[in-house]
Length: 300
Length: 234
Image 1: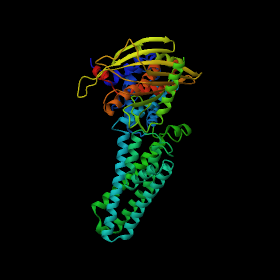
Image 2: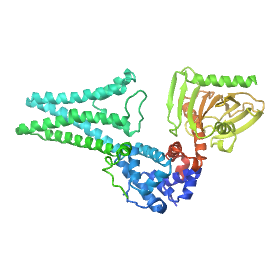
Image 3: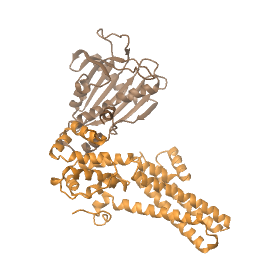
Image 4: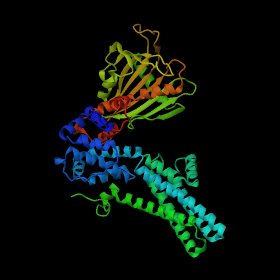
């Protein structure tokens, strides 16, 4: 009989770890749960409402399998695990009962999230690609404004991009001022080359920790950069370009509409991911559970 | 006794000397719980390695595990021989070990053997030093087909409440013109001792003693890279 890699790994860990072997003897479904988690494959997730005492092997496997699909919609492993635990009463019981269960799941999710090509990575790189495309289409829009003689619009658009870059440079300065001028110059160059969204996304997706002497976590830096881009460039630029099109319908081009479309996509993507991350943050849910739980379907 | 104290002093000096090496590179470890560095002096063919990890065991338990080099738990697939040649006292012995070479493939490496004088000494209630220094012995002369290498090492064990910090530092002089890449490969393998010790004691933790840190350590075990043995079983 052929077994999956995940099954062999889980059984091998259980047989070598005294504690896990003891726990599996008491809870026969635990192996199935962990096999589902470690396999990290996207499968349709079914709802399991059983309590810990009545949980079957099949249900445990379903719960384990569902972690991958939950991680797909999260940038942070802790958020994904929080969601995963909240969707099943059995996992909530397990979380309350075992002090080591949550840290173990958080670490497993962190490693899986960093290695998986889908989910958080896909979301981060999509966001980064949208940001860069937005910059490129804005540069094209500026060129078009100059060609049409709309110098005011062109300079206003340049000012928006400059403001966005300036705010990003200030963030970089605050973040890296204690890390030496070489690091600071390198980070500033990333901003000026307009690839900061992609670099930030790679750092967050890779699970990088906060660097020594830096101010913010990579995830927070990414959110700050997104906000700077959103309010200084994407929103004013899309409003300006929409106004330019509406005020001169004779020169409406596909390129101009595409630029507005990309800016709108960038705004929608960035604002919805920021609000989703805030809404599903375990720390915020602990402090204000009635406010930060709107996106999760709680089981009784 | 003076000889043993001198060996321990040299071990402590070499541990301090590691931090002064001009070239140091962080090594990707199998388990992220370990922190390992390879160091080198550009004018020497000797490679240095240092690895640190927190082990969930007492100081004395870790000492026993590191000291018993010929125990079943310490046996590895690349060991050709591991013998205790002379036991001078409970804290001083001489051991012989030989590692497999590489006969297949493009690079041919003869088996490497070594003869080491092992000494351990308690510095204070919370610190123990173990030293391994190259030595000679009439029962184990240099033989053809096995290249005698020098593998001095230092192990520092520090008590941290119910845990123990294990620091392992060693240098290789593989006695021959071997490229840095290959020496680094073997150094990296050698540094895995810390991860091996950590995993050994982690596996022995009983269910009622588990805490948050055990959860993190067990999670890392679930996600270690698949070995050749694992792949063969699949």
